[in-house]
Each structure stands twice: as C-alpha cells, then as structure tokens.
Amino acid sequence: MPGKIKHTGKDLAFDIINNIFLFFCLVVIALPLLNVVSQSISNPLSVLNGKVFLLPVKPTLRAYEHIIRNSSLISSFLNSVFYAVFGTVISVSLTIMAAYPLSRKSLAGRGIIQFIFVFTMLFSGGMIPTYLIVQGLGLIDTRWALLLPNAVGVWFVIVARTFFQSTVPVELYDSAEIDGAGDLRTFFKIVLPLSIPIVAVLVLFYAVEIWNRYFEALIYLNSGDKYPLQLVLRNILKSSEMQSALIQASGKVPDEERMALTEVLKYAVIVFASIPVMVLYPFIQRHFTKGLLIGTLKG
Amino acid sequence: MGITRAGYNSAASYKASKIRGNLAKRIKKHWMLYVFLFLPFVYIVVFKYIPMYGVQIAFRDFNPARGFMASPWIGLKHFENFFNSYQFGRLLKNTIGISIYSIGASFPLPIILAVALNEARSRIYSKAVQMLTYAPYFISTVILCSIVTLFFSTRTGFINNVIAAMGMEEINFLGEARFFKSIFVWSGIWRTTGYSAVIYIAALSGVNQNLYEASKIDGATTFQKVIHIDLPSIMPTAMIILILSCAGILNVGHEKVLLLQNPLNMEASDVISTYVYRMGIKSAQYSYSSAIGLFNSVVSFALLIIVNKIAKRATDVGLW
Image (cartoon, rainbow over all chains, first blue to last red; front, side):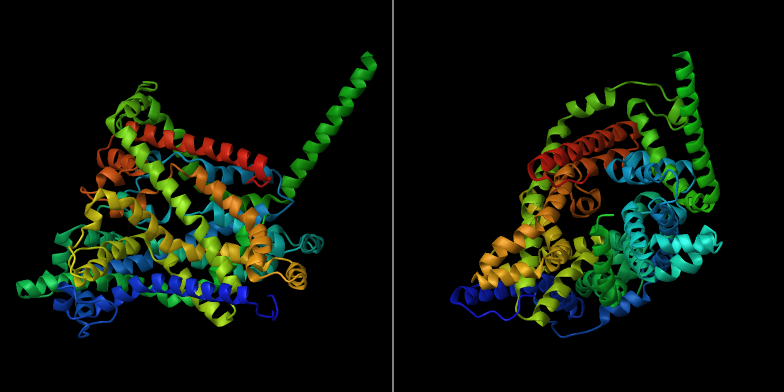
C-alpha cells in the first residue's frame, strides 16, 4: 500500500468522491436484501398494502411458522442437503482424480488429455443432445440426474491442477520414487496432506453451486418428492397455485389475510432458502477468493 | 546411397522404437495415473463428447424409436427452417442486444470498484464494502430472480411502494417488454460486480511498490496514480475478461431469463437459449432445437477464435 502521502487538495477531492462511491455501492447492494428480510418479518396486512420499506412493520414470525409446518418445503430442503452432500463428494473426488495426474510431468500424453478436457469448455453439444443422453442412460426422474451430468467443472480441474503443480515440487516426486513409493502412495502420503486448502476450496465451490442449481431438476425430474429446494422456490415464484398451497396446508385463514400471508411467505421463503449459504458466507468468502486467485495464475 | 538410406532408416526406426519404448515404459511405470484418470475420463466422454457426437441429429429427422444413428438424414433443413422462421430475427436481436448491453454496462464497473477499494484510505471500510458487495454472488439464480420479481412487483414491491408513496402511478416493470433488458442486465451487475472486482483487486495487489514510491517522489496525485499505474497494470486481466465476454455474445444463459420471462415481456425476453429449451424440452422437437443449439455453439466457438486473434494482434494479450 502507498504509505502516508501528504494530502493535496486534489487528493482530498479524490478521497471524498471515492468514499461516496463506495458508500453508494454499499447502499445499492444492501437495500434489496434489507427490504426482503424486513418484508418477511412484517405484519402481513402492512406488506399487502405496500407499507414496508427498509424496516419491518409490526414484526411477526408468522410466515416462518408456516414454512416450518410446510412438509414440501422441508422435504425439498432435505433433498437439497442430500444433493449438496453427495454431489460435492462425487464432484470433488472426480475433480481431484483428474487434476492430480494432469499435474504430473511424468504423465505420457498429458497435453492431449488436457486438451480433451479443456475443449469441452469451448464447445458443447448443447442442451438437447445432453438431455437425450441422460434420457438414454435411464437417469430421467432419478436422483442421479442431478448428481452426474454436471459433476465435473473443467475450470476447477485446471485450478486444482495448478495448485498441485505449484505446491508439490517435482523433487518431492523424484525422492518419493527413489524411496520406492508408487503414484498411489505418493498421492495419499504426500500430495493429499499438502492439498487441504484446495480441497476446502473445491468443497465450497461445488457445494454452493449444487445447492443453487435448479435447471437440471426442472428438466430431468418429474416427481415432486425428489425436487430440490431451488425448484420448489421457482415453482412458488412462478405459480399462484403453489403459493396458495403453501397456506392451505396449514389450516383455515380468512381471505384477505390469506392473500396477505401469501405475499409475506414469498419473502420469507427467500430468506429461508438463503440461510445455509449465508451462514457459511464468511468462511466461503475467504476460500473463494483464494480459489479465484489460484485460478487466475497461468499454469 | 542405398546403404546410407538403409542406415538412415534403421537409425530412424531405432530412435522411434526407443521413444516408443520409453513411452511404453513411462506408461507402465505410471499406470496408476491412468487409473486415477479413468472415471473423470468416462464422465467427460459420456456427458460431453457423446452429446457432441449426438449433435448430428441436427442434420437428421430424429425419431426416438430409431435412435441417433438410424434416423434419416435431411441435411440442413432444420437450419433453413430456423433462419426463415419469423422468430429468428427477434431471437438474434434480443440475444445480441442483451449481450452488448450487458458487456457495455458490466465491464467497467468491477474495475472502478476494485480501484476504489484499493485507494480507500480506511482499510476497515474497504474490507466491509468488499465483503458486502461480494455476497450477492452466492445468491442462487432462483433467489436472485425472486428478489427481482418481488422488488419490482406492483402492490408490495419496494420500488412501487416508493412510487406510490410519492403519489405516482404504479408500474408493472416485469410485465412490460421495454424494461426487461435493463432489469436483466442490472440485476446481473448487482450480483456479480463485487465478485468480478476480486480478480482486479488481486492484480492491483501485485503491482510493484516501487512504482508507487517513484510516483510519490514525482509528486503525482492519487488520480494520476490511478490513471498511470493502476489501470495499466490491470489491463491484461481486463482484456482476457473482455475477450471471453465478447465471445459469449450469443450465450445469454437460459437459466436466469426463464425465471424472469413471462408472456407479457416475451417480445424482449425471448433469446436463443430459451427458444431451444421451449422447442426441445417442452415441445420435444429434438432435431430442430439441436440445430439451433449447434448454430449457437458454432458461432460462439468461431467468435472466441476471432476475438482472441484480434485481441492478440491489437494488444498482445490472448487466451492462447
């Protein structure tokens, strides 16, 4: 950082404008988030009448009570946890299994194999042929359809490969070889223990990505009991039937109030679905930055 | 001559066999690495390369009962149908329009934010702003679009609440085609600016401190420092990001558009990828929609190569 610099008039003007700009960014980002949270805990009738701006009006947790009692929301939440956990295990394993050999100079055909992976980032068969393959494999309406078709992000393979290359020096492999350790042993005894940071990065990258997916579920799944949370949210957003179903499930409510409650629920569901990612955020933020920086190093 | 030639040949073949021998030896010695690669390789073949192979249904009249290979060839008919359809012009206009708007608006902002964060005098303030602006990136597409829909909705949405409080007529923002592009692009900017800035912040932190020292001695103002040191040092990174976004001009993702799309804004929101989804998945016109998808992939691929070449010639920065 530039150390203490004597303030000139121009620098002062720059500082003031700079700080105003940053404050503006802060407000623009925070305002919608604040509004959503406030709407979700406000009195339903105030929400319906458009009286909620930045702060909650007559706070109540009624909407959240409805969410907790709604079985389809809870079960889709659990489905999402399932997909995130198993999907992350599959994705991280496959990514490392590809990245480790590609990081080794002793791999014959390394250039070609790497090209085969990277080429898929530049060109793809497209949505429909991929859909037909998934269908042909009999994966439609199975949980595998959400775990397998997008399991490996080639970009992450490159990131992990770069990490291995820059963390494990070639000499280490050479001495392991002299000591008679095979590639498998070398991987588990030397490479993996040095790679905890990249594994953490990959776990977070994939977990967030899988948690946030909805499109695969939309095209590959038919039965509601397998839906992830994001798809249920999308259906709530898109159809008013889904919205009223949210409340019907939980007993009799008068008409006007029902309409009001539906509105508040839309906000509350957003907060509900964001909780896991937001709880992890400080942790994620640190590791994502790290991952991003490894990724931008040219390898 | 015969002899030398034979000698040369045998020497060459000796060398070749030695290389081959080395190769075989290397593969044999490191066979475990191929075991590692096996599953990822199966994955990439099954879910990436077989669909590329299957894209030939774009040139066939695909019949699910007959499968990829047995459906009859019909040449470029699906492409012709697409180019001649009345949607073609609209799709292309919307797709390219959204892309250019998005590149124009979202390219400079992360750079400005990164420089502003870098030059902020208070570290704590800078960190706090960075942390908050970075957060929306982790919000899912569904939640982002829910927030957008609600924020702009009539009756309960924040914007219309403000409009109503000022005594003006409420506007159904998502129900009017003319607002769609702006809502789409600026919600994207809201989500990704903080994230994109991180890359530039990293580039800025790598700037040689001597440059700042020298500029201080020369009496440069902060603004001059930004123009002459900060911006040039993040140029290469910025170029790569610009190349990638120019090459992706036809790739307006369907995931987000589909969530914000409704019959009222269709005129502005229908893009190539959502059309592929509608024709392919919803109407099961597999061949026709594959043809459109293929058109999209080929143009994007060509664009990437062309843009990269131009960038390399002009600025010496390129992807490869």
